[in-house]
Length: 325
Image (cartoon, rainbow, N blue to C red; front, side):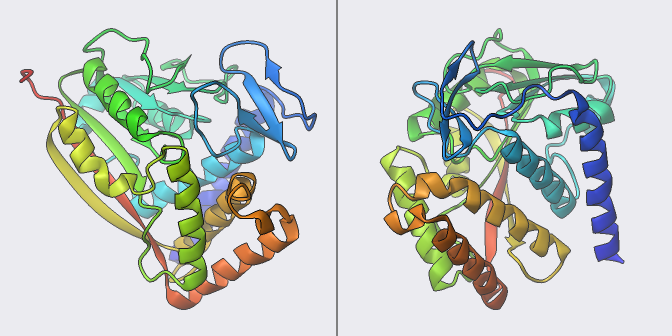
């Protein structure tokens, strides 16, 4: 019953997405050129995939339609696995109407769902790339192109809730510090922040191949100044940014075992590994061969099933003090 319910849920969400994408923002191109037409549209193409090409932006994933589809499905998996879209104690406020910032919104799946669920609240999504829907959006949604690690274009004390998830492959250590300081500035006194990240360095019950590729990924991340263990560091980083009442909810997710969530989460992981190949090949030349890499990823899925491997997520909430210290 659970499996059937979950599959029905995913099919329903994909149907809704297909309807929205009839007026998509932009189409991908396979031409190996750079498009610098305007802010948020500065792209480069590697192996036929489109990547952000803005100076100072370290983001491993492409920002084309294939990656957007992966992020849509990833959101639905997380919502079903966690049985919610947020953990902060703000339901009453959302129903009455508050201002919400979705930091690093990507294709805005979370933004749209929340906006439709809470029509009295106002949602603003921000991202470094122009990948969010432009023509079709709920009336209570706006978007801005900006980096959360630079200067958020909002006055102090503007938002009642700040939501951020899965930017571990896009923020350097200094970016994290700057981003959380910016979050503190734009949040109202007493407002909540929610940040969710995994650790990419240590999984539960990781086999040798899984541990090896995570070591490769961590090495590439560290060379670019990124933080492979962002999840377990969130409590410290939020506290240092000035937040109080920090709570951490540790959620392991099965990879290719136990139930349908484990199976579909592996689909997301394998899709993510595929999209990361050009970056991982910089440190591991044998990954330059797509077939060799594809076979390696397949063995990862089998190993995760055998070892019952879990990825660990840290859902971290905190509050801005009512009076600044």
